[in-house]
Image 1 (cartoon, one colour):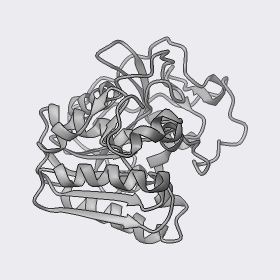
Image 2 (tube, helix red, strand yellow):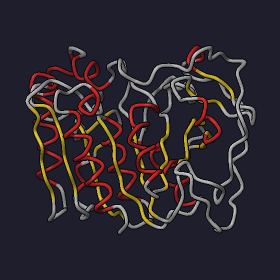
Image 3 (cartoon, helix red, strand yellow):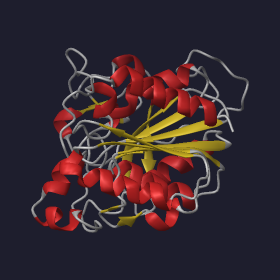
Image 4 (spheres, one colour):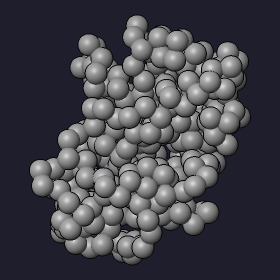
Length: 306
């Protein structure tokens, strides 16, 4: 991590901050049985077809993004759909036809899932070192409730393009937000974990869709080339900040408090959990995971419809 404030600076030199923001996703959904690079699935449904929640709409169809040729960051964890899109093997086969490809402003290609339908958009951005499945269960639940959800896989991760520099993650969030708008979202709820939250704040504050809410889990105030403090001041929508008190020996709590204190929202809440879990691990591994899952989905449902 290039820029971190306060007491995290000394730890960054020792590599501890990167360890926290790049921990392996130990509890991501298991790969589908028998998945291999040769396995294919059905073509993606164009926006306006039946959504992941099972609801058909009469909205005009939006053409699918054309597949792209590139080298995935984790080739052993990548399969190609019948339509030619690369997707992480952690994605269940029944959802692989929702895969698409995004192109960032600096020309990199990202694997992504587009779930659900409707004008109420939700962006779910994962942690550094994790993958697209960090938020997948949350994304499926929201799509079933009538939200249009985009889950990008960040550069240098999973089925997205390898990038030697691994910088500018806000451009990945920017591309995902542009896709939400392209396929019909009229407003967006921003959610991200760890550095995914940091980049979501920056990209979300800079784009044109109305922001209905913000959810941040274990996010540093700055990550790689991205500084979120000036941007979080501009987000006035209801905001929920979550972090474990022991995450990175307490340094991540201090980082999240920086974002909370500089938030431009009047309606904001800080939840500090008494454990060391990082990001979406709070939703999967915490003894209080059922409570936190409900808290997250209820907060998004309450605010994402604008």
